[in-house]
Image (cartoon, rainbow, N blue to C red; front, side):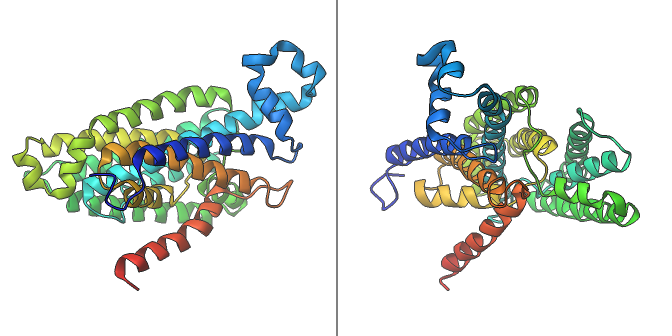
Length: 343
């Protein structure tokens, strides 16, 4: 795909996304109930390079520095990695299933994580890694079940796998609803987790999430050619040397692992994986060699912005991040649909 076909020049597109990411991180680190200071945030960011250890005493209070490094910074980075994982997984799912409506939760991974977290909350698990671990196990367990039911067939068909995931997702959602009815005193905690958020993020969590997401994005980038061929059709992909079932299995394992890890710590956040790949294809063309890294950048930017809004719209209260992404994502996606249909 040439850059002269009316789309944005790719080098300028990626330069712009990189600049937006840097500015978005700086703004997100500067806004918060504990105080808003662009200069203080900039000085703290530049401290390792220029200022040394005297900055805390001379320019920035120790309390603000601690909030910056131990609360805001890991939270912003978690939003970045979560947005990247969801967006890249969404792009991969849409290529694998040749379905523009596919997103990271199409196989029920989000519902599985939500059910695991809901069970942990109902059982009285609080703090530590209990709820994230339960969510992670629920997500991977659901993915394994879908793979067993959808992939173990003599004649492989993506539509069968897709419908299997949808059916299991609906069943798990029903179980979550049953838990909510039977445990009315836990409703608020379960619902808030299901709508996503980064209010309890720590550096130790990032040490788990960051390597998984980075390696996952790189692996999917490595499979960009196969994903491109899958969008054309199984017959064409097979004739050009793609091992259909093996490729799809590997891609789904990578995406499931990424989504399971980020959902375990951030909760269920919708629309990022659905919308971002569409926007990137519109801007850069359909080649996944550009869609995958571009979606990682754009997904991270959008979720950083959404999290910044979530914690600053009605301070000191905090909105679920999933609520922000749904409020802005749903109308945006409707506009995309209407434009595609020529309405």
